[in-house]
Figure 1: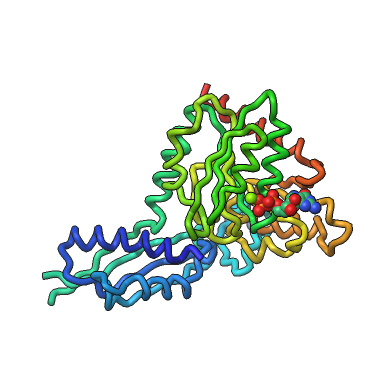
Figure 2: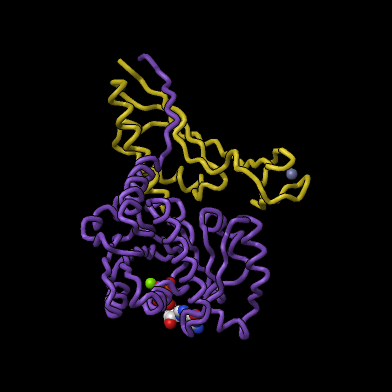
Length: 115
Length: 223
Ligand SMILES: Nc1nc2c(ncn2[C@@H]2O[C@H](COP(=O)(O)OP(=O)(O)O)[C@@H](O)[C@H]2O)c(=O)[nH]1
Ligand SMILES: [Mg+2]
Ligand SMILES: [Zn+2]
C-alpha cells in the first residue's frame, strides 16, 4: 500500500504551509481523491491518523472528497460520470473521450490556528 | 485562538511529478527512450527483459533499473546477459518513486538507446508514480486471469502498452485473449497490445519493433 508514502508527501506540504502561515496548529485538512487516482480513501485516512501523532496536526480532522470519473465525448460533447471506468460514449459510442476529472490527488485546503 | 483557512490546491504527488519531468527531459536530451514496466510479482518482467536484451543485441544498447523490495537477484540475471543494471532496494516500499531513480541517474551512460525500469511487482501502487518514462507498459500474465484490467484500472489507464505474457500457457487456462483485450481497451482505447511468451520468445520481436519505432520518433523530435 502506498497510502503511507502519499501521507508522508502530504505532511511535507502541510509543514511547509504551516510555517508560511506561522500556524500553531493544523485543525483540518481537506483532500480531493479521484476514483481513478489509484488511492483508497479509507487507507489514506488510516495512514493519516497514524502519521499525524506528534505533529502539528495531531488533532486534525481529515475530510476526503471522493471525485468520480467524469469524461466528455469529443464527438458529441456529452459529459458523463463513469463508475465502471468504461471509456465509451453512452450517447454515440465514440471512444474519443477526454477525462475531465477523477484522476486527481489534491490537497484542497488546510484549516489552521494562528497566533 | 484565531482560525484561518488556506486554499492550497496542490497535487500530493507534485514533487514526484516534478522530479520525473526533470528525469524525462534529461534522458530525452540524450536520445534515450525510457520504459517503465509494471506488473504483479511473477508476471514475467525480468524474463521479458532477458529476451529483449537478446533481441536488441548487438545493434542497440540498453540498461536496466531494477526495483525490488529486498534482493539483488533480478539485476544479477540482467547483468548475466552483459547488460548494465542497477538495483534499487526499496526496503519495504511497494513502488519506485522518481527520487529513487534520480539517485542512480549519474551512472547511466549517455550513449544508451533504451533504459528499462522494472518496477516493484505490484499492480496498484506503482501506477501512481511517474518515473520519467516515455512509455509505460503493464504486463498481465495469463494465469492471473482475463478480468484484471477492470480490477486494477489505474495500471491500465495510465499505461501506453499492454503486454499479455505467458501466452504459451493459454491452452491450459480459462484465459481468453479477446476478453482481456476488450476489457483493457474499454478502459483505455489508446493501449497498444502485444501478446508474448517470454519463455518461448514469441511476440517479443513485435514488441522490440514498437520500442525501436518509438526511439526513432523521439530522436526525430530531438533533431
Ligand atoms: N510459461 C511461462 N512462464 C514464464 C513466462 N515468462 C516468465 N515465466 C516464468 O514466470 C516466473 C516469474 O518470471 P519473472 O520474469 O521472474 O517475473 P517478474 O517477477 O515479473 O520479474 C519464472 O519462473 C519464469 O520462468 C512465459 O511467457 N511463459
Ligand atoms: Mg523481476
Ligand atoms: Zn459521444
